[in-house]
Amino acid sequence: MILIKLEPDERKELRKRVAYLQRHGDDHNRTLSKAMIARKIHISATTLAKALKTNNEFSIDTHDKIVDWLEKDK
Image 1 (cartoon, rainbow, N blue to C red):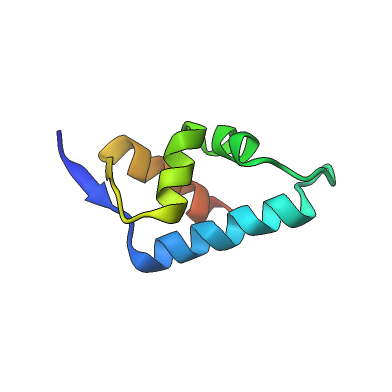
Image 2: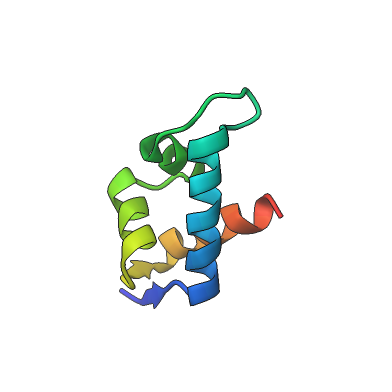
């Protein structure tokens, strides 16, 4: 299994987006928990927590899901 790390700028953008959604909410003006945000990205809440806090390596599929979600909303 090949593992990939998130780039520092990707992690920074992910933290920024998650913090914004937790503070201000989504289209429906509801604040979102990390579990709900993880569901939007189609990853588990524990994987999202690891991506936010540490420099972990992720599978290619998980990495692609995170990067695609970041690119989608630019």
